[in-house]
Length: 196
Image: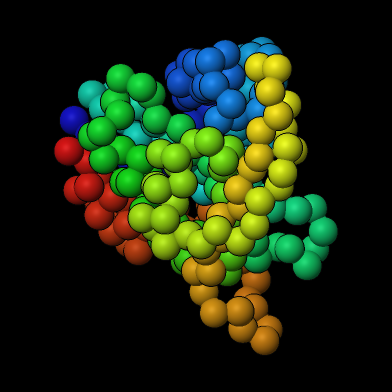
């Protein structure tokens, strides 16, 4: 059974278990320490109150997740979001990442966001190729901006314009106002079809 849905509070432990190896073994994330489940649950809750935060389930187990978050706190950036995605290593190569990102991007479009950004550690070729698949463009590089595992890492900034920047953009539609719509259900259904 395959499913994509909005995150629930009780997903936090499974999501954190997916995230842990990325913290411990990679420079894909610049976190050093594994957060407590309480702190992580608060973070998931805070993000999902405003932004799309999706999980992909395979046989009722969370296999991956993707979410949008604040690009910058200042009001003029309200139509821009930062994206993150993580897929459990056991489920790599099954189209889960593509299904989640497709669903996330299409959801952000109906919410009214205009610009999406992703920060990718420059050595992470897989993620760079993944973002290029979704027509993200490299817009710049932060040189030696992250220090992890006794090494400095460059970070590439990928950008995707998802809606024409209107002279007067409309107010962002909250995620809780679209969760029950047919349009959102269709996006979910199309995303699920991408999973192998």
